[in-house]
Image (tube, one colour):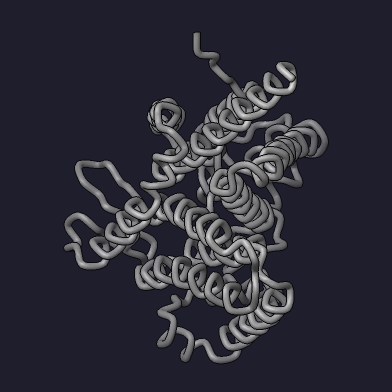
Length: 392
């Protein structure tokens, strides 16, 4: 009889995230601003679809996913292209961006799916390159560098055209981190890091000092420029541009140690169920609740690092899927919690696995299904190696 391998650690972590998500969203929808809304039910539907996707992924072999990576990547790119050329009847302008397909009340954001397909294709390209060119040299490293940059650049450009600066930066971050982890010579990595940091500094400097140029060149809206100025402290509270972060900080600060004990329904927190869900957690459950959520992310990342490092010697493709998903979770978590407490600029980046959202929830769970799959493959390999050693 074929032995079934189960990653109980990843299952328990997922159940905890689902519980935290539904509980936090329930508390968010108690605010008067969401009267009549039932985000908990909608989130449960998307979570159910995500769990179905996780189960379906377990039916595929890792080699099948490896072979499908190229097709899935180009499918993701094609969705982004279709999004740009579609009429406003199915791609409405929401918050200044054309980032969603919308039909009969159902919305889908292709760029969320593109994060996963890009991680898959980067993992495919890196692992295949390393298996083909086992003896690394400058020529092969530069070839791998070119591959990674081209794979990452295509979706970033298409997403910037929507424009969706936050999601584009997430994909750029994933590409850069995967580049660092690809095993390319450290001298090249140092050069890339220097260029990236220099570009970021120049970008922020020009956004603050030459906003008109940045608007015309990168299609940046006024509100995005205001958010950067708020982040670096150039906006005062009277300007109105610090409204969101002020509300978030008041909500978190009033949570104290164990959560706010008074009436909270009359409070107003912008996007409390999505972008600012961490403020709701801090307000309702205090420092203890916020610390538990942060520890839960730490435990997930720690577990995935352990899986990724073990896979590195036996399944490069699976290892890089783990590294890519870790990067995705890290960027989203650091950026979202950072903007909630005022140390990062405000963007429309949700707190993955907790924030309400159809596309983001579904694709985050698809990614979780992939790392669960390769995690089970690791258990299978370890079990096989153990039985082999016993036979000897």
